[in-house]
Length: 462
Ligand SMILES: [Zn+2]
Image (cartoon, rainbow, N blue to C red; front, side, top):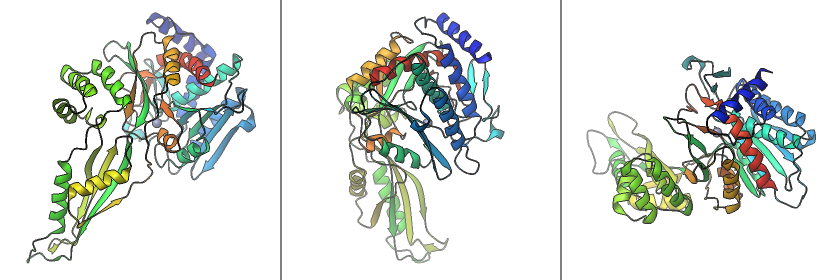
C-alpha cells in the first residue's frame, strides 16, 4: 500500500516538473520499485554466497504471477550463478523475436566502506540507494513490471518478446555468452544496461538521451623478451629489460589512425553542444574531417574523447628480472587495447609488432572473456521507436547514438550476429556511483521509464 501511494506521489511530482506528458501506471510503478528493492536485498555477487539464483527465482515468480506461462520462464544454473530466459509468445511464430537483455549480478560492495548497507535498499531524499540500484536491478525491475503491465492492458505482440537476465555480466560473462548464442536469431536486442538519459547537473532537467550502438573491442597483448642473462658485474650490449623498454616507448609514441563511423559522427555533432568551447569545436571539426590535425590533437589530449576517435593501446603491467645481481633473462609487459569497431584484434597486434620493430619481442594475444564486437547498424526502425517512446515522457529531449568503451552483454550478441542497442530509460545526473560507493538512482525516473517501455516494446514487437 505504501508503495502504491508513493507511486501516486511520484506521478504528481513528475507532473509538476514539466513532464506533464507522462502517462501514470501506478501498479507497474509500485511493482518496479518493490521488485528492485527485493532484488537489491539479495547479494548477487560472484563467489561464496552468491545469491544470483535467488534473484532469478524472484524475477521468475513475478513474471509468472504477471501472466507468463511457467514453462516459458526458465532459470538455468551455471557454476555458482544462474540465468533466466522468459518468452512471451507472439502471434506470428515465424518472426524473429525482440530480445530484452539485462543482468542480475552486481559488483562486490564492502559494507564497511558504505554510508548505508549496500544490500539493504533504502529510499531517501528521492533516491533508491543500494548496490544494483543503477547497475542494474531497477532497470530490470522496470522492464519486468512494464511487460506485466502490457499483459494487463491486453497487448498481444506480433513477434515473440523474450526477456533475459545473465548471471555474471560483471565478471566472467559465461552466462552472457550462452544466452547470446541461444538467442542469436533475435530481430533486435534491446540492452537495458546501456545508453540512457542525462539530467542537467544544476537544474535536474532532462538534457539528452543516448543509445549505445557500438562498443570497442577489449584486447590484451603480452610482449615478452628473453635473453641468456649473465652476471650483472659484466653487462652485455643487449639487456632484456632495456630491449622491452625501448619497444614500449615506440608503442607509446604511436597513434592509430583516427577513425570516424556514422555512429561516432552523429555522436560528435550532438555531444559537442554539451562540452566546453574548445572540446566542442574539436568534436565538430573532427566530425567533418577526421584528418584534422588540430582537432585530433585536442581530442587526443582529453581523456573523455581520446577513446572515441580510434583504437588506443597502452602498457598496463610489466615484469622482468629474477635477481638483484643478475642480468635479466626475461622481461614482459601487457598492452591493453580498446579497438575501434571494425578491426580484428590480430591486425592490431600485427600493427603493434611493426611499431615495436624488434624481432626479439614475442607477441601473444592473452585476452580473456572478450570477443571482437563490431558496431550494430544504425536501424531507422529502432531510432524511430526510441524517439516515439521518449516523446511522451521527455518531449523534445535530444536523442543521439554513442559508442562505449565496453564491454556489456551486447558484445556477445554482436559477436553472434544479432544487432544490439543499449537504451535504458533511466535518466540521472552523473552522481550514480555505479560500481562505486553509495550507488543510487532517482525514483522520479520510474514513472517515465514505465511510460517509455509501454511505447517502446509494442513499437519493436508489433
Ligand atoms: Zn551492468
